[in-house]
Length: 519
Image 1 (cartoon, rainbow, N blue to C red):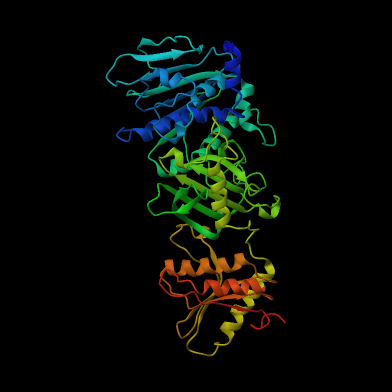
Image 2: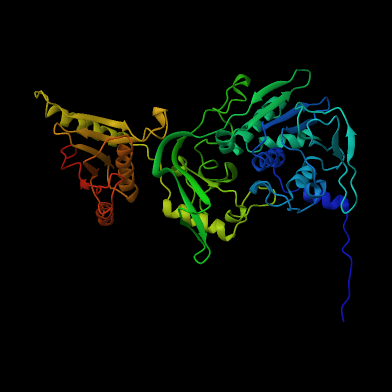
């Protein structure tokens, strides 16, 4: 025998529950921006792809926020406002079908101030508006006779507006030291959050994003959004590149596949801390940062993006069985998964502010990263002692030809991999470069005491960089007081491989004592 029952749903409690998925107002705004970007990607024939985010401080200190785009507008309201509805997805950013509703619930807990305006016909004199309150399993009203468009664009598009409390708006400053209660500083932190979250999209897609800000008693100020990127000091092996892969279900791993539909763009970087804005005149400038890329324990590690949009960052011990330590603060690994097929991506939380831990594709991605960098690398900056040793070696080599008409070319910290960046300061540096009088090109990588596997791969990166720059190296010399047996074996294995010119690598080990620069 069986019985049935009806599950009671309390609208206000369900609305309150929907809004608990976010930790800051930035994440709320991101949901609406995600929808706009997804609409642009799903309709590449659009003439303009623009987003305007407006922040207005009210006399009550509440903040009126709007997000407007120049997209196609919304025609299917049932799908757009349905919870978990995914019948129409323009891109992987529409993965769950929860985002917009959750964002409204978080921004407007009273379910009283939000509204959505949309226009699907640019020639129409009217537009559609849906406004609070949201009702579950009941008809919602569409006002289709509105004529005074609240935004700036005159074509099709969507305009979303809500009013949030100052307390909710202030969540953008969590984790920042000092007094961050002023509206203008909070607005600048939101600008920074947007520049970080969408850095990969801002840099690669033709999308214009603008933040407009109005303090109480002042006029609107407008800021074009720029990408917030790290201050790169050097590059760790395996460097900066990409790999096309497919997901192998038998091994639960991402494997190289030239015909795969997922491309993993990767950057293994040594970074230095970005400057912090010193005063109001330096706000809204993403060459500086209060929150991100500070080369500290809370901003280093691994950063994962989907199609340029950050999904999770500051990942460390999930990949490497190593405790976080400030000696790894300069390590930053940026992984950007590029695909239009959401099924190839690891799962995310419904609010897209994290990954679904335990998802097989997340474990596969972590495994892929660990293969690229088996162990985290401590700061690659040379100690003063190593620099002094290479300077002495340079002087010795030049002194040997002091009275000769033919002289070798010897330089320390010569830049390489010029294809990476036009900014010379961002390029990797060869410890010592030598072009002999016979034309041989020798490159050196050194450690003061003992070498490790990362030093071998660092030398390999120098070699590959020279070839990329148009120079064919002759020999790579790894220098230290001591070379462990497994390092010597690794050198031997590398020498069996071919470089991009089709030649074998030619690495040897040597000691400071043998070179005459250390007793």
